[in-house]
Image 1 (cartoon, rainbow, N blue to C red):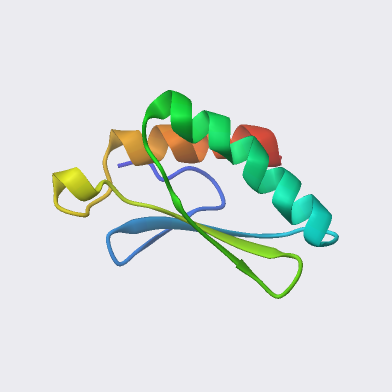
Image 2 (image 1 turned 90 degrees about the vertical axis):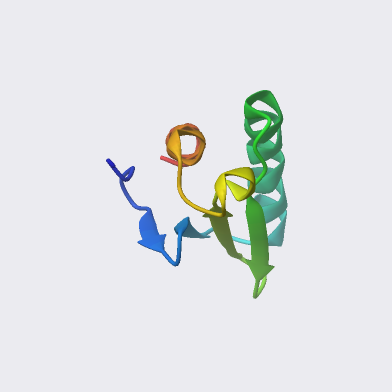
Length: 83
């Protein structure tokens, strides 16, 4: 399994943390993730903590809560809007 850059494989999930400039940028970034997730019909867990930090966690629940190609593809798409 090729884990996309800047993501970690942790506890059967792909996890990446982002630090943005402020809360408005955080919410805007989450709103950019939403259509990617909808198009993939695959929805991440997203934690907003502090006022400028996001943690995105991807796992495929219907495959037994493990990392699958769906997670890798969505992680790559999220990288595309983040980098």
